[in-house]
Structure formats: structure tokens, C-alpha cells
Length: 125
Image (cartoon, rainbow, N blue to C red; front, side, top):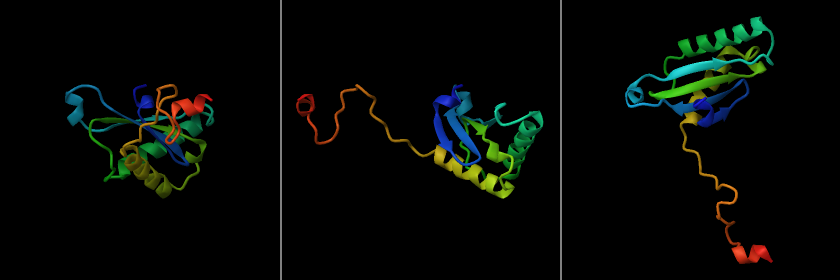
């Protein structure tokens, strides 16, 4: 659940969610991966095949840009079943790199931050 609140990267075959692991000792530990395939994708055979493909892609990708002390959750899409295995590996590496980029802060609605060049008094009239 913690990873769902972290950074998200969407690619063709999956979405990647990333968040730091809680705790002092966890910061130096290895990255952890989870794979989720919902029932909307298909039956048990298709879901298990997708999980096996992702596990093998993670195993074979020796130089993954995963950061130690982080949790990563791969949420599979139906395209993961038919995607080329090499493309799946490259999308995985690309998504991991993108998940580590700092996200720009978005102003929250009602936080009092106005649009540039528009004063608050001008908007009321």
C-alpha cells in the first residue's frame, strides 16, 4: 500500500509504483519487487504467465537501475502477455530510471496559490 502512494510510471505493458522502505536498517537493504496482476487481465494461466515473465525479466536484468532501500510494485497490463521479452526488459529499466526523477510539486486546489500574473482581486470581479 505504501508504494501506491509513491512515484508512478506508466508504460505500455505495466505501471510501476515506487516508495522508500520504512525504517533505518531498510535504507541500506536491497530493493524489493512485487508483481500484481488483476483478474481483469484473464484467467489464472494468463496471470501466472505474466508473473513468470516479469520474474524472469528481473532475474536476467543484471544492471537494473533500482535504488537500494526502495519498494517497487509492478502492476501488469494485458499487453505484458504478448509484448516482446526484450521490449519488456527495456521498459522495466526505463521505468525504474523514470521513477527516481524528482516530481515537480503541484499546487493543491484551495491552497491560496494563484495563477502567475493574475491577482486575487482580479479573479473576484
